Amino acid sequence: MKLVFDDQAIADLENIFNWIAQDSPAIAKTVVDRLFSSTELLISFPFMGHVGHDPDTFEWPVPRLPYIVVYEVDQAQERPARAQLNLVSIKQSHGFGNSLAVDQRPVEAFQIADEKLFAGFFDLGVPARDHCGGGIDHNFGFGIAAQTRDFPVQLNTFDLFSVRIDQIQVRWSTSDRRRPRRRWRGRRCFLRARGRLRRRKVSNAPARLVQCFHAAAFRVFGLRPRDR
Amino acid sequence: MTKLLEQALRQVEQLPDAEQDAAAGALLDYVKHIHDMRLTDAQVAEVRRRRADPNRKLLSHEEARERIARLGS
Image 1: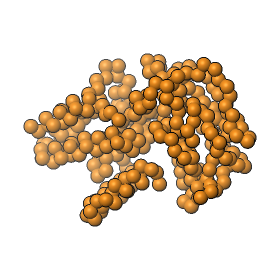
Image 2: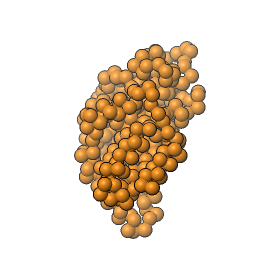
Image 3: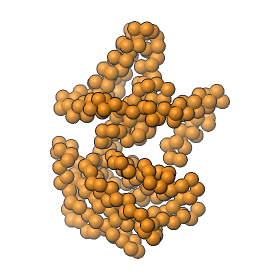
Image 4: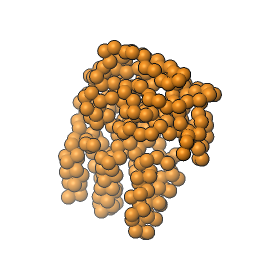
């Protein structure tokens, strides 16, 4: 991953240096170097921060220093032009004790392949909200990750569950960044399944579905312990 | 446990004991202060302002490194 810096972020570092240097230039240099090298970790671990207050940002509190690095990941750069959505993670902040993390199987656009799902007893409805790529509301965070993974759900410390999402409402648009992000130009698609997920046929699908992805409602129809 | 944490722990395992303790200290420190480390409303607003700035200037990694290296010299 390539790292670029906002000019003002570097100015922030210079201000931090100048402030501390009034007492000790050596310590100022150490602190700023440490901040900068911590930021460089993003090259290897771009998602190490938590979802930020501002949509599409991440925040990385630098350990043992009272500073937070705010950054964004340009996921479009990480994918070829015709990349397809690989992974969506859902994290539930509260409601079931531990966080609920769902990693979808490799999906082509929004198709989720052959995962098992069982009796429905809760509904992970999420209010529609405009954001691209990743975001969070009071209960859930969404993220689009770069890798294909398994599909685990962990509701407590001891059990893993396999899950299939029964209904997904997706909005998307092409990833033309010149357009205002709030203007969703895509269509909606509802996926429903009993035996397995089916994808409603959508013609003329945009080439780059990934960047402006928004899941408005996820409904999980039940969970069962995963075979281990 | 996330894959990233697993990866981090695997790397930490390779360190000498003293360094492992230092890494553990950093992690515990992070957990302890996780709720203290929040952006203020003013800072969030500043982040938004910067991101929305049409004249936003971006520096390459190398350019940024050079500017940091010049500090104090």
